[in-house]
Length: 266
Length: 266
DNA sequence: CTTGACTCTCCCCTAAAGGGAGGCTGTAGA
DNA sequence: TCTACAGCCTCCCTTTAGGGGAGAGTCAAG
Image 1 (cartoon, rainbow over the protein chains, first blue to last red):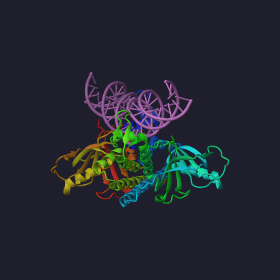
Image 2: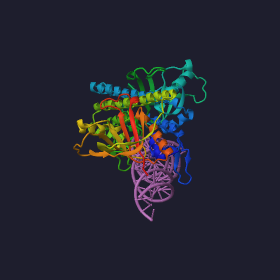
Image 3: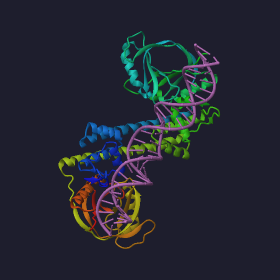
Image 4: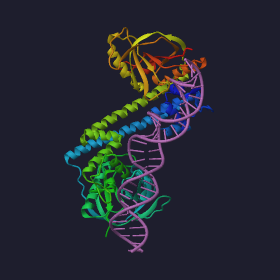
């Protein structure tokens, strides 16, 4: 039986950390002295403590570690979990590297004067029959829902998907209605509904390039609205004239998106 | 001039985040309405906001971003900072990958039954003249101090470095005295001191392998002390019989370290 | 009896927002 | 004229994984 200080040296975990893991029920001392309430650890807990240390060093959170222990307590399994962590690190690296690449392209374009030409025009959208589903979550997740809708629509789908955005601000959990145009009334079920997008007057522009830079297009629209004294209303629309496919992302620099925001008619 | 909601859509930053950046003086609205205290942003701030978003997406902290802005406000410079972040991500990946490799080796050895044989013996250390320096910080940083000492000792150094540990527990900021044996009295300066490590009785063992697993050796020592009723005293010593060199790390599986903890003589 | 080492609990602090309450104004609709 | 609603404000609480430190109890030695 080891007192906390000894156990700290043996395991390479700080005393503070050990107390915290106790509080979090991640590593419970095998005995607690009734009188002194000293924590007492024994040999069997050393392995457990080392596993925790290894996983923490690899960047796992305590919640993740708890989850791992719930599913497997074997030392041999750790390398598999670590492998997953490695993959996510590599993914992160790729993401950052992509941001850098886009940034380089963009600054080149700014220098070349290609950028920031958004032509805003006023238009009235036609009525459009769509099947749709609404979710609250991340912008990037809409692909999943679009996929579901296309699967449901089968051969009745026509044209490209449209998203309706129900927030007047950018949110981590946004309220998004994903729509796929259909040629005729079809049966719907569960969280899929069928509706007519109404005829509506508003302002529109075209954004060419990755979605990360779509803010520029919104800026153009808001500038235009401000200058004309237009009052904008929800939901705004994005029509993905050209975007990622079901299986491949393609070249984001060539994505084409139409943005449309309805204007309040007085 | 944009109100916060509009600005949020244009920049892709949430309203909450914008308010927070204001509070942290990272992105201050160019005007605040006296009466309503509405935040108002203008076009020039869009670039600033986008820079913040890019850096946050790359994993920089707000402190780091402030630091970057203090040294450079040019959009063209961002890719260089991102490059540094990429390097640190790659470094992290290597670290995790190394942990995994060690773990695989170790589990193999456990299966082979090679591991966990620590022979503990009682011994009395000889007096030893050393130059030394004490610091409070991380275990891994001791290489820097050892390097300084060797540089100072020049040709007078002999044998391998010794660390004295002045904590009875594992700490993030440990109190460590780094020693390099010398053949004769030499001049010392600043934070380097010269002293004789005293003759002292205690228990010792040899650890072969990476430092991450040295806890096992401490366990053997503490077990031995507990079984003999020995009371251990500070500082404990690690003698790096074989370890990383000045320029290369070598093979950690072959590092040889002697551990020694003095025993209180009654 | 005191001292020093070791332990305990309890409280405050960090970074980067997110969630929500409660309150303000301006406008539109009844 | 009253009310509802949108959009904004401030203020407070919550999250992670402990670190720092205060104040107090315990144990053994001198």
